[in-house]
Image 1 (cartoon, rainbow, N blue to C red):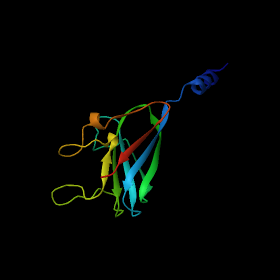
Image 2: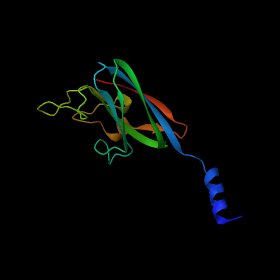
Image 3: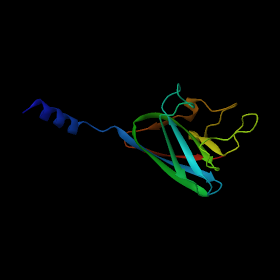
Image 4: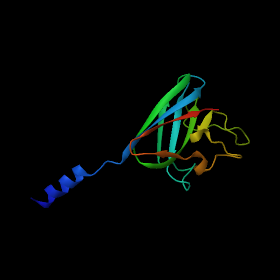
Length: 135
């Protein structure tokens, strides 16, 4: 058996560690714009440098978004309703968000974003579903 064939057999037999994360987002106030989700995999990157970002068209009530093929592990989410569709979280003159937002675990920071640990969710290899409430 050639080395290439052996390598292909091992690759085919290797377990897949990619998991899917389903996010249910409650409290979407209108069908305007889109709901944006940023996925973070460490305290060092949260909440500034997402590993992955995704969006889904908004509709009033609850929207669902799925992020696929994530390695099993710890993550934190930042979610917001980009109601005006400009691709960014709008803020007032003192820096407070003017669009609805949430973090995983519905964590809330005292002055800004919560800690990664407070927003941390565990994604097993089998996948998971989580829920956040926009405020």
